[in-house]
Length: 319
Length: 283
Image: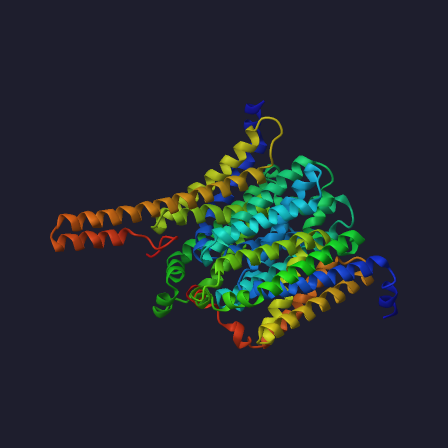
């Protein structure tokens, strides 16, 4: 019975779509986390919801509606919010309007019937188990565009993310990059929301990258770890849902729970490691002073130990 | 015009207006602090988190309000305690929200009854409020306003100058947890009568517009309250007169359409322009 389930097309399609969505989300998520744009990511996902329902109403492909509305919103957020504080409010306004629009389209699309609730739910929570081959094709195309875009701006984007002032001084177009990244994020959100649902896309955009940023320091290591965690979370979630004895929990639940668990374990581990490192440095120092090692030697050691000490809470991400 | 006056004869419209006004006042006042403290994401997440509590309560056969209260207050405390700096806060709120939504989804799948009821929690309808729910909501709005009034001075201080507040011995982190709890109380009661979306609109819309126009906090709160009431009245009336457009869409559109010209043509009032000192670097 279980083996049959694992051999089915449903399982295979869910795994393929989930893997692609998770890979893209965890790579884009790296910048989302570094730039503290989780709210922007969430809002662009909500905008895709509005776009998809609107497209369904007008008989266009949902992914087209989601992408167009998402790109428009990303452009608006990028053009309006200059500072993080302002952006917070702009994003809030965009979310509120987008969700209102989504509800409006939904109410026109399926007026008063039970379909109304079901259609809304399936877009919000996604339906990884009903992924069709053509969905996978669309998802891969959009993902390729997203990854190409990200690769194209990778170096300057990283620079302007970790040190915006220095980047601006060197002539890197920080503002333009910020808008470009939001556009990339909007495409990733549209692809993710339609393939795996808003809930899963949000979990995959935030949790793997946030965990990786806490545990590693070099950008390349963080990206690889984020990718592994993202793919691992979705595989684990799908497997749990399929193999659970008795009534299968929905994939949305197992993936988001797994993501939250991974993140909080990561937080605990990074705090523990930080505390331990602090302790050894202090012990090492006192041992040094006790032994009266040569001054040159001790400063050298002190320097290297200071170099190893990360900043409070979050490790620094400098290239 | 006569149509609109005729509408006031229906008890459900009056009910909706009374409840909507109470929530609008409470939401505008706490929304002011939410906008100034840059806690908009938390304000967006808490009503959504409430959905999980309500779905769980429906599944276990207890009052949805209890589930809403339990989970939103728990989440508010978790957000306040776990999130220390800006980047942390952003991510923590996101992770907690997706986890709660996943949980709600599980409850919904286990319940297998009509999704309509839980769906109503997400998108809600202000026109379907019972008299009892309306009274409860008004009481909760009054309670949270009282809470805000009690915390008003220290909260304002810790919002605009957290460093100085810490130096003066104001319990800044406790205040931020308490503020989130107040937000959670408003979310719990308002969500089930008007839905997560409408509540969020009333939190962010009036306050975002008001902080751009006026300078002093009391004036901004007063203006936000006025705008919130206006949005609710206009939106409810327009939706009821039309009959097919959802109320939440009407209110969200009005709020957005008022905000847009203000955002484009009004220079922000000086008091609210600068981010709090310790957060300025990340901007």
